[in-house]
Image (cartoon, helix red, strand yellow):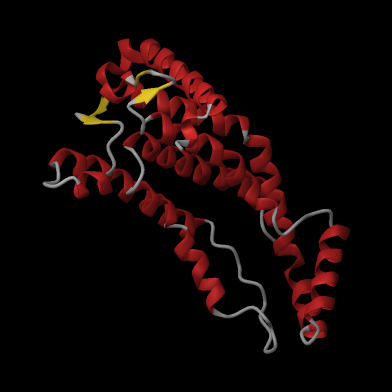
Length: 247
């Protein structure tokens, strides 16, 4: 059974489809044949603007975690041999400071449904029983429903699709590298008996490029959403890092 054929989901996709088509019609005098792509970028900016308060709370949480680093190291030294007590004392410390180790996850969780909708709208040839005209829209001649992996698996790769999808993925990776360099967080002080493996810190850098890998599998429209949101995130965090600097 197709999950997207379930009536409430189909209705949601149809609403999203109507919204994108309306925005594309408004932007067509300015963006021409790339009006639907411009609509995706505009929707992304609107979503990220709505999440600015969440970004502010994320910056405050990051500042609090950096401030608590010495206290967390002291707890690991004291209770390193008692994992349950260490976890209990750690969570109590976060509660006393009115913050959470998971505060930074909220923006990603809130955006996940939007990414899913963009992905689904530009993946299905029919939505709620009618043809999906969005798939006729292109970016530099490449249909917005095209993915790099899909193009490669379909036989002879299309040069334009390779160029557009590859460029989007490379730009996302470039923004990830800038984010890693410009927003480097000082590591927590380590102790000999720390239960956290040393390799865990290095894995954080790898996660910055996960979005670029995802962009290879999703339609061009969803890739545009991802590129716009990572660029917005970098700019927003640079600004908020100045307002809420790390100790």
